[in-house]
Amino acid sequence: MRPVASVAGRFGQAARLRAVGVLLIERRAAVNYLRECQVAGSTRDIMIARLRATDNSCRAVLDEHRDYVLAVSSGLCVDHLLNCVADPLGPRLLRRYETLYVEQFASFWDHLLVNNEQPIELSRTVPLPPEVLLLKSVLMASPT
Image (cartoon, rainbow, N blue to C red):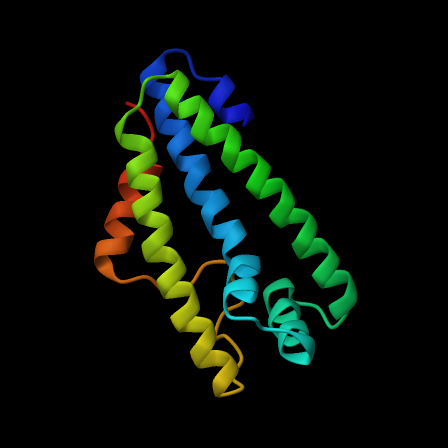
């Protein structure tokens, strides 16, 4: 949230809040996926270990949960602050991005887990179609 505070003016702060919102959506995706799809046990441990690039699945699960809790609470702050800076479009764009990102995340990890594949590149993000990348670029745009 420091980048948001360092910008003067509502427009710049709204733009930074939107960008932070995108990062938080991506941070929450893994735990939301595990919960929604009821992924548990060794499958959960494998997924989290892959995301965290570690063999210590216990530590990875704890770290992922900690990051999830922080992302959820920070997300609430972003939503509230977007309202405070009178950005009527930001929350709607973020909700749309979250819907699209969650769908892509689930599709990507469903495929990997069903086929017992390793991700080509260890990353928190998943491959996104062009229309989702465009929305992300709009949300991540820096104020000019």
